[in-house]
Length: 136
Image (cartoon, rainbow, N blue to C red; front, side, top):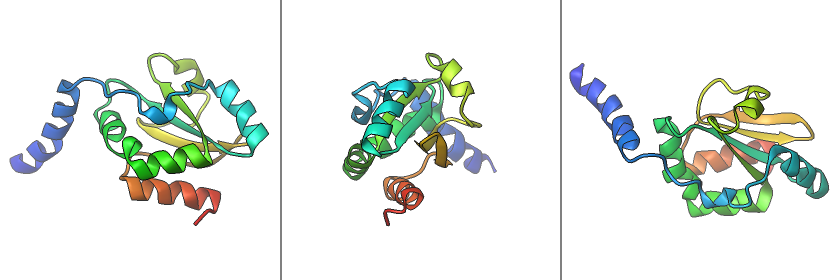
């Protein structure tokens, strides 16, 4: 029982000790929800909204792994308009979204949420997004 507890706690503690991960490069454009919505309407690409928090260990893990994976970066930049919402800076916008936990990725098009999910590895992340867009 103690070994299982340590296996669950230690990785999260280490992520916290490392501090917040850098914002992944796919969010370098720093689009607001309003800007992204306009671009989405113009291009037909859905918005990919990442809701995260600097104090959240699973968020840091997602940012340090899945969201910098080359296949995810390529897929997201080709198929979506990415938006990064950090809890402490964007709490008003986050309250308007159906977010129950951190991190949450939402795929939104024309005001409709196509999918919403938590952290996962790169291939499953792409599969989940592709499936929501019917891009198998």
